[in-house]
Length: 399
Image (cartoon, rainbow, N blue to C red; front, side, top):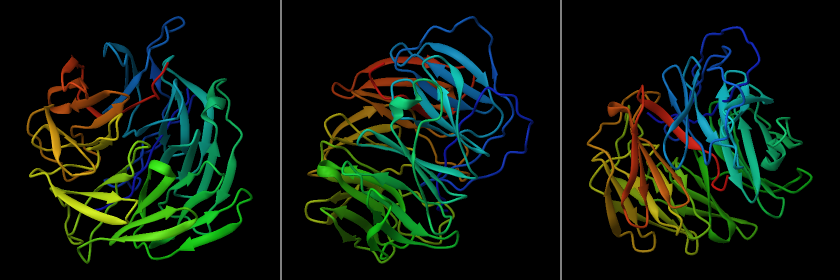
């Protein structure tokens, strides 16, 4: 089953408990949490955590030191919670039923900043900006993440889609805004807006448009159900897939590589397709290459390394380090044991998060989290947590 994706966040103000509501999820999917007041373990001023990681579990969040993996704080928070980097060294977004909220992960506390709106969805970081798409309203908010520093809501560029839908947007370095087209029932493509939100281009040949990624030279890729839609040098180009139905709903890009990494699903009737092939999309030639890894993976398995490597965490427990130019698996890192992707996308499964030269891999069945050096393949350290984790993310490197 293919579902759209979502994110969430929380503030420390007292809120009445509301029933958690399911949200559509990204590439694999996203859901919702309840807006109960998060309970933070009391302490005097918490010491700042270096390069913090935030992992969700059933009932709350763990904040860990990114270098030592030491558990710095546990925050009780009912419901299913999604976590995304906010774009700076201190904060992450967590989505709630009422909108995007900001968590200061370095200081382990919620701020008062909030972007209200039903069904908060994709969080995108590009060219020094952070872009939020709220599915329930179709609203796009663009801001400089440095403005999160004082805890207040930053000033934003705002655009509202003609129809609310599960979408995504990304602002380019020249101020153009790429944003998806669609309704709650059908998504068809994307349009380009200038700095004043005036439409300057559109493409409606991307059925089921979902997910985005940026490649070298700021080429933007949007996933379709029959290939990938590229926006390059002011023009749209369609990359055709070799199969009639071929969904590439999740992508990972790198400024160091002209090639995008994507998933590749070919069964529109599957309750849950477990693909073994990945797609490598060359933005220079608008061609797609398929690579069979011999193992399946999930929507939380794709990432990029510091040199542009394509990274895929397989259900055989191996982290595959792939040369995107050739499709050759250059390194296999034994990360976790064999695992099976659950039918329910909200259920935990091993998850990959990459920051700088370090790959973090969760193993929820064993309640463990591991850190690996991508250059050497060496396991740097591991930690066993009180409960198995679900979402795994963190701040941008450099705190």
